[in-house]
Length: 205
Image (cartoon, rainbow, N blue to C red):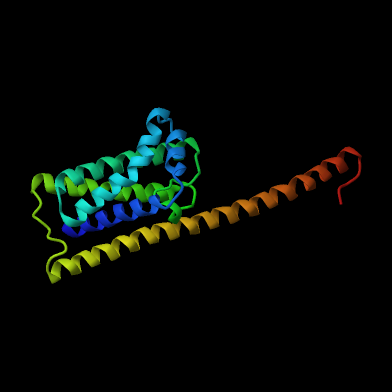
């Protein structure tokens, strides 16, 4: 469980850093689209990267682990619910989960990614509620450093895989829609010509 904890900490740090270098209106626009009151949109979108960064550090270093895990699970549940609602409402702008690293519109893979992160956070909460976490000493000792590097590599690979799959999904969907639109543009002319030929008493060629 310590490995998963460190990996989630890295994911939160990636999200924090990516949002910090992205336009600030991305998260705010998503929140407005799902009906979040305007009075809290700016405070939420502004404070989110800071909170993600603090939680990432706490989970990675094993500081206040159980409260940090609860907070991470709450944020993940909230963001997961936001993405699901946005998807159901037809909002297809980027979710800004990872700033400029994630420019693709909200898709089914975005939901899967959010659900996986939420379940991982909840698993940590359940595990540490039944059995309190031991101090990680993440940056001390050769074994801890190896574990931290392994968790960081796994987290980066997981995020990169989802982002790549979302780009591939967008490319496939766009290509399919373009081909479908081309067929629809060509078909009506043929149907119209058939109807015109029949109405004039002549057989269509």
